[in-house]
Length: 115
Length: 107
Image (spheres, one colour):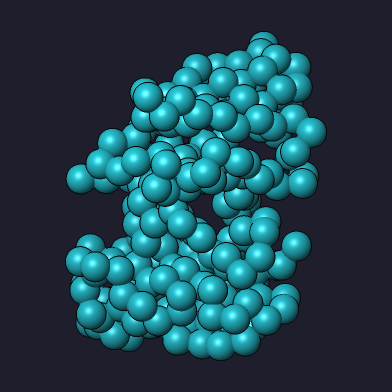
């Protein structure tokens, strides 16, 4: 059974770095890509970036300067780090498995940026 | 970036109704269009991939069509469990981009 679960701090201080973990089961990170997507309140979903099965990454150019995605295949985990957080980064963050595009998604983790 | 314009934003319908939701891309996306359903507090669920391919386990009342820039999700006979938010995603080119969503409510 394919499962993805996001975890991370619910609250982050402005200007600090967000660190999220996506823990997966039911598939191999070396066979499937993992995408990160977020959903700002009142806006549509935003694709953030992808960890390709081969280990390379691609990012949304709008976030590229702040974003880093990595993984630990031995732990079945994919990591997202985004720096210089501001209030507009308050949203729900999702990881999702996919080849070209997401098929299975995690339930998401809500992150609030506030002092 | 490819812009995805989804309509309508809100849709009020009754059980048994046939409904359609549309997504228009700002350029040809070569049928690389997926549809997802999301219920409050749940993970999004893929319904349709590559315009018209039904995800395994999804009821056949869901169907997709389209080509070029224009795509449609059709629910042939609404069931109570179908009241949710639906959104489209183009994966013809990066960055992947989403429609703004359609909230389907019970009339």
